[in-house]
Amino acid sequence: MDAITEYALYVESGPRRRKTMVHVLELLGCIAQGATTEEALQGTPGAIRAYLCFLKRHGEAVEPEAAISTTIAVHVMEGSWIGQGDPAAGFPPDFEALRAGDLAVYLRRLDWLWSDLLETVQGLSRQQLVARPEDGGRSLDAILKHVAGAHGAYLRYLVGKVDGLPAALRAVEEADPESVPLALALAHLGHACVARLEALTEAERSRSVPHGQLTWTARRALRRMLEHAWEHLSEISRRLEKAGG
Picture 1 (cartoon, rainbow, N blue to C red):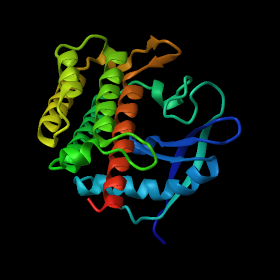
Picture 2 (picture 1 turned 90 degrees about the vertical axis):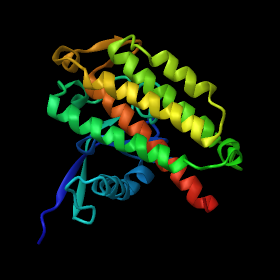
Picture 3 (picture 1 turned 45 degrees about the horizontal axis):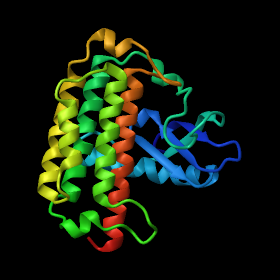
């Protein structure tokens, strides 16, 4: 019998086990979401396999069809904004020093996610980018600009001022919602963020930075950048698939 890979799950949900996000920190960037804890946990194996497929497509030696099991390592149910991606207390692995080798792995994944995001929207018409779904959600243009803003924020929380970042963010915000100009602005922003992360010193990879109710570390910032990009890449892909795009 093939060995079963067990994944530890870091779960956050409100006290009534409503809106829930599951974090698979061994596959940094992989998350599952649900309107209830039960729904999110039921969807977690599929989310793991989808993320493994993404990694395999980009060359990582993983087997999406291999047997897996899950166990809940942490379930956070107290605090504000629970179930949205970043409970104030964070998770124990968030506060481990980020090794140089891990940083290189995570930055490769971040580059793949950013490239896939841009490829997914490349060539879409202005109408497709600005159209809002029937449920009243955000347009694709708004989602992309939201991802860009959060991407920059997570980096600033960790390292403070970043040369060129404000200009890159403005270029994204001011981009006309045509696929090529917006994609170019997003690509420039992604390169600026990766360049700064590549230059993290050993001290920056180990330190804790208080910011409001949260304490940021390099691991926490990379986790959120990966998770957030994956979350909205998946959202955009589902929407385009539903629309036949």
